Image (cartoon, rainbow, N blue to C red; front, side, top):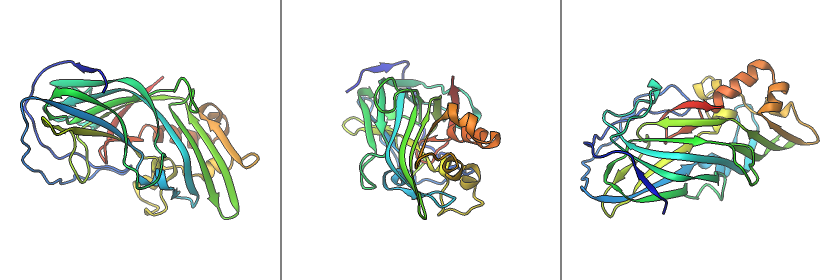
Length: 282
């Protein structure tokens, strides 16, 4: 269990409907709401990270490359959960203001591609004895790792890309840091409810199809329109390997493609299908 920091005190709980996304302009999502009985006590709150099934099992990019991930490392810190009233709107770009705020201390480097599509999302850590209620907002930072295989990068991709008779080893490191702020989790099951004896759970979700696109989606959908695909990386191939970071990509990619990549990287963080507001950390 990790150290708990409580920065303020109690609030009234609101059950709400969050905003959906998937790299596309969000539609309002109707979620089934049930009456939640919140005990005036303390309970446990778990924090998980999810790269989704396509990261663990592979997928085909919008331009036809079959990408499988050996490893996909992200380094996360400053993980903070909030009980807010009113609910936080990430499209506002405002700071999250919580009546109750709890923080999971530590820096965590995790491999989102670990195991296969049947694997549960990765448990980063948990807090015990947090005030019960609905934690309906979350924020976290991605920062460069200080050691290990992803040293120097907040995101490090080790993958294989194949198309026809072409096959490349892909190693992409992104050294920039990002701060993501999200509202309520959007998905099939609502999250963030802490009851005495019943742990709550908050998810940090990462949508890496935003970089490469998804051939299973229409070519004109917002996801594939924002993605750059894999072809710009394949064009940099040397000796069957694509090995780049943002510094070298700035020199090698067309200016418009590089600018598009920088924009896409700010959209990776979600909570389920819920949008995040992103601040670039220089």
